[in-house]
Image 1 (cartoon, rainbow, N blue to C red):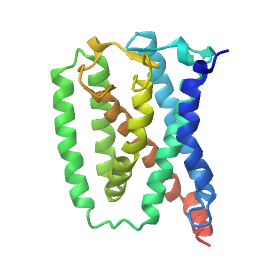
Image 2 (tube, one colour; image 1 turned 135 degrees about the vertical axis):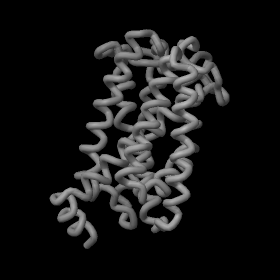
Image 3 (tube, helix red, strand yellow; image 1 turned 90 degrees about the horizontal axis):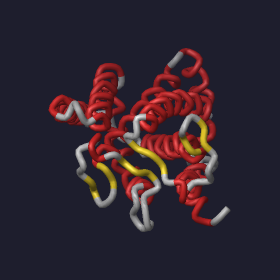
Image 4 (cartoon, rainbow, N blue to C red; image 1 turned 90 degrees about the vertical axis):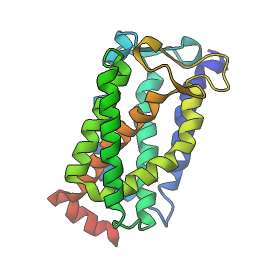
Length: 240
């Protein structure tokens, strides 16, 4: 097996390495919140793996054998399965760290207004481009998740948007490589008939909103698990 076959796996591990090791830092201690984070990760991954399998089977996107190890399950390479645990973990870690900075809730009104504006824009584009599956499904999904967040967890939207903005830095690197930046060919190919065919560098614009969708679902589940009766008691013990 050649070195290029480890490309996608190295991208996955590169995204996970710093957040995972930093989880044990005495001033962060994110590992103490794994009891909430890990179930959120598993549920979110389950949703998006099913989405991924369906899109791959319908040739909305597909994978470059040159950059993967060659082990497939339900049409997805092993690295793609790993992706849905490493990337959400890294993003949830960023969200948690933003919380440690004591991001105030007074700006949540502005975050809620921004979410509402985003919902209007995304739903409008989705309806106008309904025949483009990646665009319509992604934009309508994010609209629905934003609606749930504004309804049930509006006070965490500001911290979420801040953490999403921070996560865009590694996103440009990792997703850029997956879509062909710095490589002779993309790791993931896209059927441009099923998206807007608009790219930031090599990244389809839909990828930004796809990433926001699974990050927000992940955060909502994490926050929900922390506030359940069992989670609230565990959270109190973690403060010590």
